[in-house]
Length: 495
Image (tube, rainbow, N blue to C red):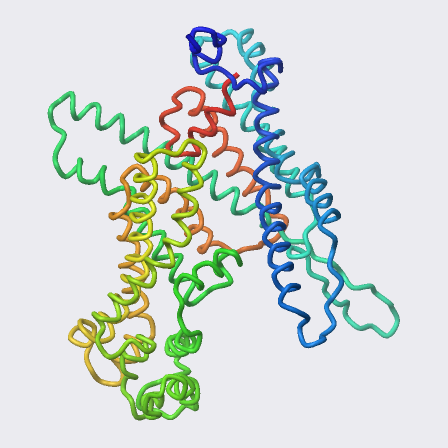
């Protein structure tokens, strides 16, 4: 009875109730702005709430030894600042509205123009062409909107050369790159759409000709896990050796999950730069010897001139000499740490309409995701141990030079290669989302975080062309834009 009383648009999967009164051609613009505003404001509001809770707990515990505390912004002022920031015309919400609204509104105009152009193009081809051109144009303007906002991280003041006769002011050099992550994301999505479509057409032909092989079927099923594993290898390699290539928040999260002594990381970094060499006294002994004092190990373990190499127990950081026991211990600790993150989130999703079946699914889903993350961390550490103790010495040798090569990158590289294959534990439906999540971050590690401003047109061109491909495909063949992003984009773009 209830379903029969619903409007036809809702029954057919039409626009949601809140935007039913908006003209159809304006709905994508409004939805995009609302979604962009929510994604920009809600995380900051959540952070503000956590900060207020933490502040109240500290105030109840008493003053901090009478130390002077810097003046804090009141919650009301912070709330107003966050809400106003989302309305800035040079921020993400306006970018989303310009991109989506511009592409849908321009498409109407271009379709009328294309219909008047004589030629042999079919109606479908004209429609696709107008959609691509509209999305390309809107993407150019919307990205320029974000790029026009000044950012301290992408400007550098260069002092003027001293001259006895002229008083020249310091010059400010502006750099591009603030929208690089967004452009890489669009490029990866467009590449996924194109490769996926070509592979689907190949599969259709091969199946029709009864030539589809088990190797091709395996390649299809392993494509997302392989992309995830390769991406994670690049990300973990950068986290270990080039942390500046990763976003600060992402770097901090990996460090928190890894739970590793920074002195161990620095020691392996010095092995890679040849500052620390086995069998030689290069003045690096105090680094690991500091760990030896803290963990109550013999001091000679930290002297690279004596310990060739330093024992793998140093990598285990207090878990004993067994690499296998350390791996199991790592899995247990990482699983517990992950459950504290995943379980509350999963329970929150079922809190609105709780049931035993949903509760069971939430717990199992959290356990599976925690097992994935636990295995990820475990495989990384055990890969390091395999290269240092179990396999590496038999392949590269046991002399000082071979140990330098192992600890100079081979052991970390083995861990980076191994960790990403933990994705096979995850639900197959989530693998594609996770692979498409890490791929742009991995690609970003290969590119400079900022670059000369006169090269910015290249990034704009890549972003616009990629966005045009994704938007056109989302309107023509929505299933080809995979994952949660594809569903969200389909919901936003439909009239």
